[in-house]
Image (cartoon, rainbow over all chains, first blue to last red; front, side, top):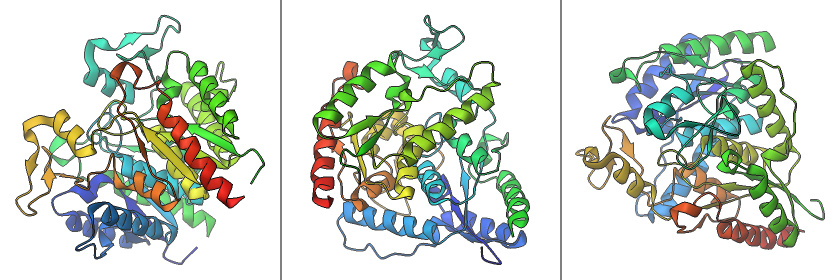
Length: 197
Length: 197
């Protein structure tokens, strides 16, 4: 472990109008807590003139390499365009976990997955006849009823790596910019990695 | 590599009313193509009487272990409760990729990500003033415009591991059960892993 561990900052933040602004704010918090923050938007690669698919694959490969060069990951799992977290972020969390990196995460929406799916799908969500107490959607497909914030693989990965999801109740207009949950992740990481050093 | 490589079969199939039925159908196709199929639903663990969170974490840890014990992953990336793939599946794809397993995937929805997001969000999707040709949602957050089926990290991972996403146009009532894309993944895997053996 480096003296100042490198934290990969996964999240849908990269889709904000000015991703470098939130990246800079995150990097400052990282510094304050003894980490070096690495954001996908730090990745300046020249895709000019490339076919779109090739450009996409080049960005993907560069992001994977950035994660390989980091010591931990901090993921923003705030629900994004649906009841669950951004799939790009989730991929990166899984990738980091597969590499054995300690994983930390926060979400700025406090409702549980089942509450959000009920809000999204409405009356088509019904009790499962075969399994009282569990629910299913319009396709008859089960809805996880563990009371977690998202699919169990996400919080399971955090738990297995020694952390807990930080859940914040953030006003909608700051959903993708509020960093209090992020800062609490850094505090968790400082304690956990401090113990390991 | 084992003589009959073990393929972890990630997908929202596990949420179907009878996940063991589709798992068995997938396992038969695996056998036919020279693989041993391993599904999350094969994982019989006793969570009886456990608090819900502990049960969830036990399932997650068992799934991670199953993936560690496999030689490749085949993911069902069909959009699930939103414009993107199931996040549990995406986590597992990332995890497998982090472990260095060859990755294959299919989707039973042929529209691109941008088409699905436009269908979902409607008129709030608008051109980005600062970046002509790119789009943004109601939060001003960018929508990937690479023409891919989902977030670039997903297809990027497949591409980097030597495969291509299999895209099928499947009627809605068979969206989560049609296995023609899955079978094509197995064919891809047989060629790729055959070359490696």
